[in-house]
Image (cartoon, rainbow, N blue to C red; front, side):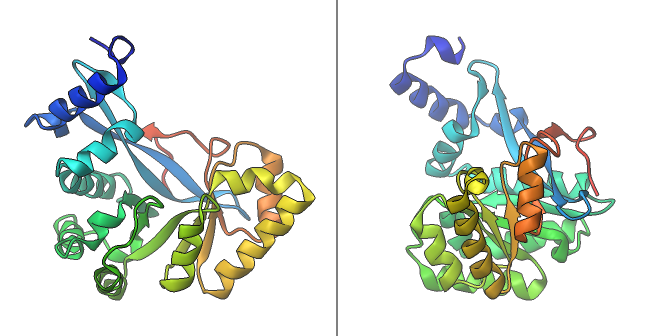
Length: 253
């Protein structure tokens, strides 16, 4: 039975059921998308993206299973797998970027689990970037700040994801000391208009004033890449530079 034959409520229930199976993680693989320096077009890192192909459901989109994995307590195991597998992929050079939701980041055990993974793989923490996803309210700001402090003191960099997708990310960028800010593709698409370029330049001024590195997401053509570079965006990511690819086929630094 594949997803097209399942009604939406039934599909969510089946995803939940399959996620709770002991062999769930055995069917998860990771794809890696390059992140490049826009001035030299060299690959400097990769983002790890989870892919789940279930024997019964077939291919399941991350947007469908990640929230349910969070609700069912499977997300910590998924994040640990992303860290351990990704560290092997970029062992030769470059940084690894891994997504983490706000609730997972605020888990008091999270910093220790991240640093344990670095120790297990003998991976330098300063080559790890953790992207805090835009969705979710920071309900425990003290824990969030404490986790940032612990990880950053160890060398791990923290990114705010999807600036331009909502006001909550803008507030976070101002309130918390992020090392990297990722500019949402919705903002990047507007760079070909005068108003869009001005909005992007204002966003970049804020990012750089706060001492963070700016990454443009969703770059799909040369013209967009050139305009982003000309505006002062530091790094870029998108299909122009490479689609997500399995380990062994992904371009690494």
